[in-house]
Length: 242
Image (cartoon, rainbow, N blue to C red; front, side, top):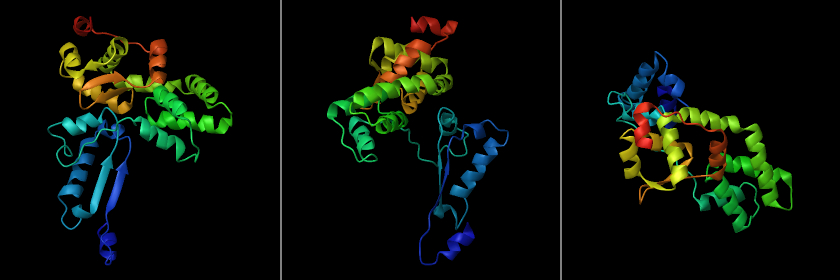
């Protein structure tokens, strides 16, 4: 890396490395040393640290890196949680790649079905676009059926990563409607903050930052959860859920 930097006499280089899905690393015996070495490279290596950046991406286990008081990277990284697209972002993702204009109602239908989840938008629109149907809503219905038939294991994987508390919270929001964070915390305890975070960046719950209200996002996952999802309530949690 130093040789690369030294060779760029006429430019100011910035080397950025992306580590996607780092969860397996956190579980390895050498995982902590891995992150400690990256802290050293990013923060404590003269003549090099200022030219090197890193992005670490993942889901639930990222919380351990961010919140662990002894985490090597905990206090040197900027932490951002991915959020769902709003309806305007959904429209842009639907129209720009395909160079096709869709009706406002169809955009709303896709947004309601996917909740603004970029992967689900792309999946649905790839099928709609290849369908060449004159009725895009009919093609969207086919895309939905195809996903439930062929890709529903993805939702099962999401559910398994949620953990029991997050799944129980999702079930409550789904059945009771929008809930304020304070109400959820009063029923599930302070650990619910982490569960809400997981639900939010996975893309099944949308949290309004202004009102701090959580609401279910996306009809597709909600329908799957009602049919295939399950929540095992531990005895200590049952009273809170009731």
